[in-house]
Image 1 (cartoon, rainbow, N blue to C red):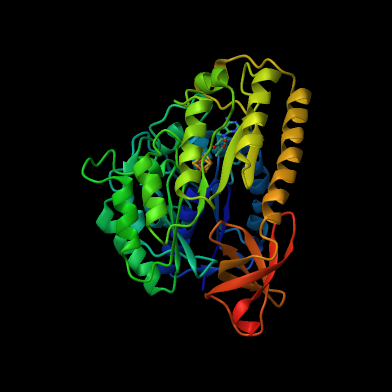
Image 2 (cartoon, rainbow, N blue to C red; image 1 turned 90 degrees about the vertical axis):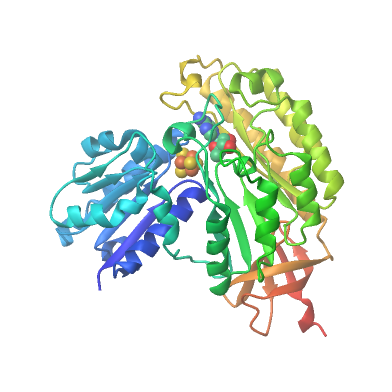
Length: 438
Ligand code: 5AD
Ligand code: SF4
């Protein structure tokens, strides 16, 4: 049997696309390779959100090139956001690549692979969105995790954040029809999945392009599918997160008490330059509303440090927000100019060394907040969905998205169990399953 290997960079959307590509290759008769050296087809699913992932792709390709010495017929393919943005450049820099395709024609993989297997360069980068892109949704996913699964509910983004490449690599917002989403949810439940994670670049805008359905309708409909025990969704935009959605989060029992709500910066001046569409005050009002309806909610966010023109005073506004909100987790990155975005034309004002220090200070401060938040779990009983077994211990997540290592004698895989937390670490909890105490 021929074997495939997929290396994925970037966000959940890319992970889900890779899972679908694995599903496609499986239906074509391929099986997963243990390692890339073992594969007949290597796919690199790329991200372009910052410069670093761009570089990582090129170094991965440099490594994978060696497969051709051992297996001259092996096919190397590049897809995803960097391929969409700079596919022809990749071909120039890495001429040994056989296949390049973008983000809206992934469902053409079988056709492109056939072309590549005949010894041709198979390149298809579309400027416009492929009208049949939802063909991809019909394939099964190959997932590492048996009990939780992503479901793509919308693609693209209509926001115009001035730093962001995504609208260029993923196009405008397109929501999937609700019936098709529910069908996929049902397949996953039939396959043993307990937790459904709805994903999209901007899920809170779901349905706006369809006109007859809203994000809250989708939430209620997914919750109505029998067997859906937990629901998560990522990523929401603060502007589109309305009180109705927050109410639904509180009301629907399966929706987990966790939300990732990117703020990006704390300073109103910088938020305006980023065209985020809210002020610090408006963002904090949403957080307050979330905490009012869902008192035990855990929160995470994304931060960009060093957007063009950001001063120390602006940066301190971000620090102020982090102290005030007390997020459970923060993903912070240094600003990285992306070709073709409006911000890439704006001059950088601080030197890279200063920005690195700001970023490191922020990360260190957040580390303490995260630990403090974790300490609140000491001695408490939490509900955990057990997702895997690792080195004799079970590993799962709380509804608030905390990683828990569990001592257990019985097989707890796939179970939702109450766990008494016995130890708190910086990035995880440890505990004992309650049933086994009695
Ligand atoms: N530079 C740095 N970080 C960026 N992000 C998006 N674009 C950039 C950029 N040009 C971050 C944002 C976003 C996350 C996925 O990546 O914080 O929420
Ligand atoms: Fe990276 Fe954005 Fe593309 Fe996801 S959508 S892979 S984060 S560039």
